[in-house]
Image (cartoon, rainbow, N blue to C red; front, side, top):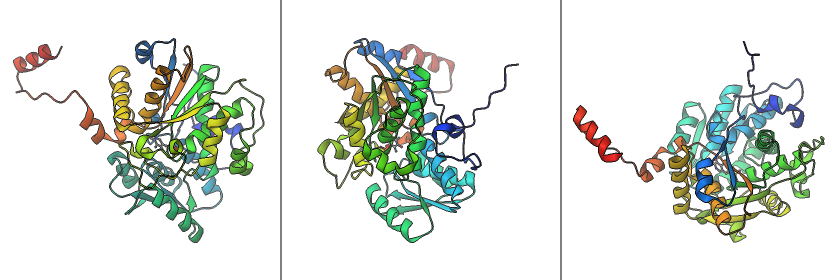
Length: 377
Ligand SMILES: *Cc1c(COP(=O)(O)O)cnc(C)c1O
């Protein structure tokens, strides 16, 4: 028999680089350790000697990267004696908060925007027993209220302004380097509230033993200093992508009425503004926007050419780097990794609406099915 190996989640795996004490009770669903999928079919289409990988975060327990941050944030909240957590969410944070709260035996309150939440995400928060509060407003309204409520009631905020979230999320950068044996040249990532791009930069910097921007350290306060030997000697350029209707970083100012089919990044007032700019500028990266049409086209491309089904917000990272390869912003021969932030099953409505396949209806007879096959070969 092979030596038994039971993966126990990212805190156990990267414990020496995370702010947890030996005696801390870990709240985990075995998150992390997601696949780094080489997109060899898309590589053939784009050429230019590009090597392209997707870090498929849809494989996390609740179907998005939010679990990486939530295991840390809830572990910390419970260790501090907190009995309730709260977040504003476009959907995935609430699904994740609900799951980890259930696991820990504490209460989760989640504020979601009216009408614009993908069905899968709502279903998760509901069955996992969160108290779901739908506000007549958008994510940014929810975020503002959560910050006010948390100072008035005994609840811990688990949005990405909680520095433990970013600490957990930085482990995705570790996993990429551990898998490749080197840092990528470019990392592409969707940007909404901008916590994740900031967390990846912390992770990539930590593995290169470089202290990231002062802004990052001030923000993380005492929890981001884990001075260890360098694992690699380079860091990738960070390429962030936003939806055209919700692109405050591209416009250089906050957006009042963000709108996009990619509901996970429908955010006009990103909380990690300075951190994200530090990641982009320090790394020599860039920020750009894609239209909803480009986002959905890329979601389809990934599904049809690679069998990878991610949610629309996730596809923007691949769509963005493909365009930046084409227009020369990313040099030939680059090794590129992209984060696919969430699973496509989160938002089945959007997938069905734009899928080209359709469904063929026939009588329950051999001939009819044979004809359908011949017609569609
Ligand atoms: C939360 C989320 C994002 C945005 O991440 P930020 O850290 O807010 O920038 C992107 N895609 C998906 C699927 C998400 O759930």
